[in-house]
Amino acid sequence: MAIETSHLNRRIIALLIITLFFFILFTARLFSVQIVRGALREVSNKNHELYRSERIHPLRGRIYASDSKIPLAFNSETFSVFVIPALVPKDKLDEIFALTESILELEKDYIMTTISGSRLHMYTRVLIASNVTLEKIIELGENKNILSGVVWQNIPQRQALELRSLAHIVGYIGPISPNEFKIRSGLNYSKDDLVGKLGVEKEYDTILKGSYGQEITMRDAKNKIVENTSSIIPPVNGNDIVLTIDTRIQELCEKALGERTGSIIVMKPTTGEILAMVSYPYYEPNKIYEDNNNITKYNTNQQKPFFNRALMSSYSPASTFKVVMTTAILEEKVLPTNQTVRCTGSLRVGDRYFHCHQRRGHGYMDLKNALAESCNVYYYTAGLKMGPEIIANYARKYGYGSSTKVDLPGESSLLIVPDANYKYRNFNQETWFDGDTANLSIGQGYLMVTTLQMANMMAMIVNEGKVYKPHFLKEIRDQDTGETIKTYEKEILHTLDLKKENWKLLKQALRYSVTDGTSSTVFMRNSVKVAGKTGTGQVGRDGHLNACFVAYGPYDAEIEDQFVVVTMVDSDNDWEWWAVKAASIVFHGINKDLDFVNSVKDLRAQWWFKQDERKQFF
Image (cartoon, rainbow, N blue to C red; front, side, top):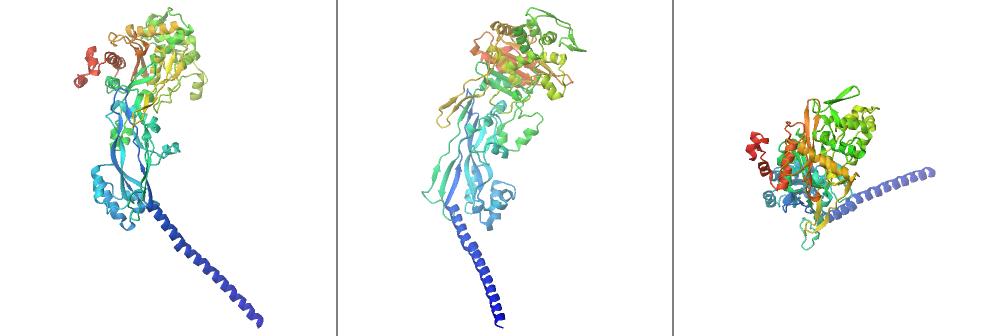
């Protein structure tokens, strides 16, 4: 009996011990949840309420043209509105959000959709509206006592002049994308930043951007600032950028091209400075700043207004490539300059006939006249004699097949100087035929270049063997003081070593091409002496033609006073020799310091224009 009692007592004691253990565990858990965590939460809330850090936006650097004191892109003062979700009373969420949406003319439930879920407990500001007018801010202020957790800040808004063709150069800014933020990791960017999307705004974003400042304030439990407790770290404003662009020349080129799909480049060959770059059609950055939906409209426009054809489009250089061929012929002594080749209108290569643009033939052609008359048969003959390797070698020395490294994003990657390896890699064809060489000799076939590369080709000739990196940056200035921080230093991109007499012969041949060649009946050569070459490239099988003119002048001026002009008119325009006509207007306008209208009048070339164009301009 005593044994049974002892056994029972042990069971009771064990039960009591287990019960006590769970009681202690439950009590500890309850203390943790209600007392410790509550205290921590209270401390945390107090810390959030006592110290608040707000970013101070820097002023983005302005963008200037070289000839103007008025910035092309600048900043205007506008407001952005934010919500700090944790400071919005949870029992008044619907009321506060509805009133805010009404004042700001936002869609119903827009704010709740933006900050739903776990974000409702954040003390971080959430942007709900930007570019808000002062009138709207005043209305928010009148309801400040009701709108707890709704705050606003004066934030600079990007604006631009009416840029027209300058838009491709200046660019625009917009909200940073996740991929852009990832790329800029560690470079002082945040997820709600605005960054450059195109043009100089994108290329020099880190220079223009500046650095955020901070305002740290102490606040009481009602989120009011405690007096004399603010601490400010001022922002560092972005630097200003001055471009090489001359707005007078830019406008002259823009109007000379008109509403024709294509591009014009004016370059200073001795430095690589781009004085003008026009591509049509273009877009208007201010329309994007006014309504972000216009980006979609531009992107879906079949004319591709975002597309800068001067450096994003690739073309067959057509007969302008005969400049490269002439260089190789002279230096490699493929044919003596006075030796003639008989052009009957075509040349048989293998089992095919390769035609000249003059179907009845040019007769006997020497080098100078072959370039001037753009005789295909002469260049077929010379190309087949020298072979594709020599042709490709000289093309690459001029810079074809590689990037110009211009300081503007989006340069075409379709930069091709073909050879047997290229043909095999891309078309799985092992044999390079004589027909491929014939096509290459007149700038057709697989060869692809940009308008900017053609400008570099002419700069190489002016400089007699040097091409400088083309660029838009002239200098960087401190936005606050106006002091020049950095001036662009020219950089050699390519070199080509030719005998001095061959440079002279090449220049003379290019001059002769304008005075007595294919462009002579159109180009107003008496206004300014110009050396150059026309090019006409067939696109597709429907007979549409790209028209190009590459030139430099004044031919008799000092090298520092000469400039390169390249005009490209795409195949979707009516054929009207407009590449040559536009270049004539540009050369005359620059040389005589005339605007478009007066350049045309001084040339007496109003008859070049259609009736509706004459009414518009003259």
